[in-house]
Image 1: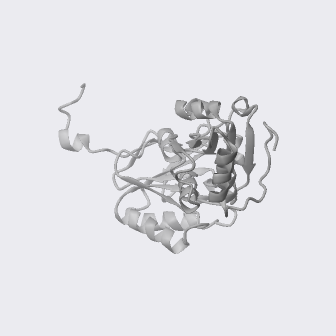
Image 2: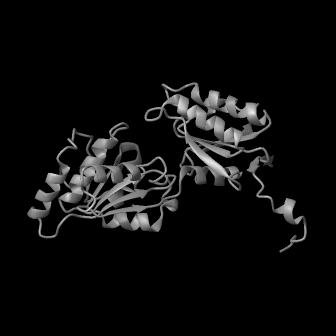
Image 3: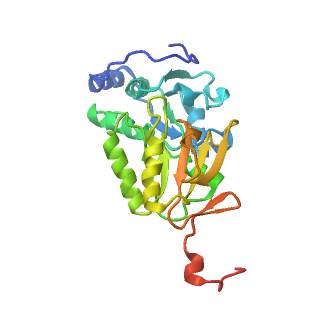
Length: 286
């Protein structure tokens, strides 16, 4: 691969990584490079964390899902070794990133949002553990603004009390377990952020989840849909469980369902923390 070339994925065998690590270290006087997993935030360059930006600037190699690589400023990628691949090639990208680091390149793996929230941080750490490389490669994980926080900011203030996140993707988690988690969250009166609500193969999961929540909270419960937060084609909608349309969502959408206290205020979702209930108006004006 030439420096600065963005390529599609190629097959990389993960086996034997520990042996490769020893070979790489013997070959290089300087030892392996640093491996860093960063969250890009929602997608806007204005919301890229300074620490993540610094890591991208100093990186010799950058690895990521092809759609997320497109979110990185091309100027930050110029002159670097680049590797991208499509969805469902996470193992391949991880192996390639580790290989780059073992060869001496400071390597950055990019995720959208926060890399530790349904991102690549866990897989990279697990790969190093399973391949016996925890002491061969130095790993850093740099946070980013997660999708649920970006969506919440655009919707108002829906996450002011206890909340949880559930991914509706059954690629790695059985559907019955997903729906059990949704039901338990609804019964516990959590504000619920739903990730990966819909895809071409998963057209009905969101409707089922919203119906399950409505059975616990009622049709007047506020719900927000945010698609492509802080990107040029951003879409933000608020409604109620009784009036919303699950067809508003796709894989680029985050859905936030309010708890029993959440209300709509001038089109914004508000989940009260409880200050007025506890203190009344004694602190008005402070």
